Image (cartoon, rainbow, N blue to C red; front, side, top):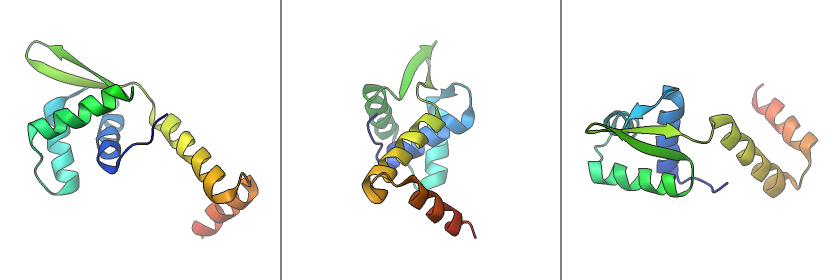
Amino acid sequence: MERLTPCELAIMQIVWKNKTDIPETDIKIELSKMAQKEYARTTIATFLKRLENKNYLEKYHVGRKSYVRALIPARSYGREQLRTILDVYYDGDRDGLLQDIQSANT
């Protein structure tokens, strides 16, 4: 599973949060709110194409409207990122990771 860039992750969070297929125009609106800056339609289209190429989502059309559907669940991506953190920062030491998670929550 390829790692996502910050903007790609923001888009995926919007798609995951929606829980159903989301119109591409809604992604543009939500991303602009999150980032507190305006994104061009073409910029959003480029990010969506990259996410399609990485097999994170698929885009389809109904009439003149484009919709986006997640192919990878948020938890699957999260688990993959945890595996990377475990391997890279904790050298596979699960107990060390769990201790740090517990101490971060206190």
